[in-house]
Length: 366
Ligand code: GLY
Image 1 (cartoon, rainbow, N blue to C red):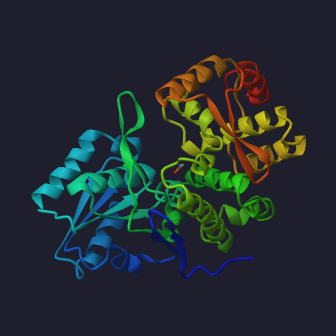
Image 2 (image 1 turned 135 degrees about the horizontal axis):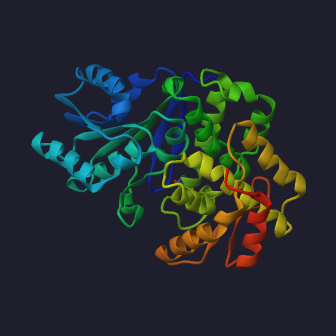
């Protein structure tokens, strides 16, 4: 079952073509992805991976005239315009030209910021993403969504900007806290429910290995999830169609993240969102009781939450409605016509949403 991953190369095709390299100890591939035109490199990284950034700098110094590092805050605090301005200042002071390159090294927030800085410096310079969390490996670093937050909301400023390559070194996952690995696997499970159903079977039959970042099973799961995402963004880079399926569990999940003041891990919030979407699927007659139970079983087995307090519904609905208005559309949910077959449910009446929520809510705050 295990794929040998010395080097797996997945191609994103279409209007934004680039390779994704997955493996262990693959950082040596970095110069190839950056290309030969760059003379100057800026590694944008968070404090939690400062040691990796330093060794990357040492390794790259023989290839380029100048390799700089810019340390930015961890997590969402990185995605502020002041932090982007700091990076622009570093680029300006070091005379970065249009042929130079930026490397984003870190979790999803850092790769989103680095992407945004690369997209905006001189109207776009070479970008290579090197994700260090499971979430960033399977989702944030792939697909070219870049952005920062404003006081009014998350990801309100940004652009679709394809990297020149994504380098996924699975060895980074070894140093992650267990909860972070579990939360990252929520996006892998999502890829299982919307496309590659073998992912679900692998987790069900090899749970312990799935959680062991050094195992071939973990490598296979990451690779399969990246393949799902690469396939979807190859067909729909700018989210005009099927890319929306990647938002399975995200409509309610984003509202939960908001309710939890962004202190929850994204994967935990979308885990509940996926159970909600599954309950919606059951109410519309598409999914069976067993399909919904399978959602709960798999997500719970990974230690992810599958319920949320009953009294929170009005607030969650209000947040989802606001989000809908901000994005000038109807309230939309990705649901499943069957496991592995996503579709969109729009304009659902509030009573049906409430019924679905009733099924996953816990009676009291806990
Ligand atoms: N995270 C969903 C997407 O990249 O479209």
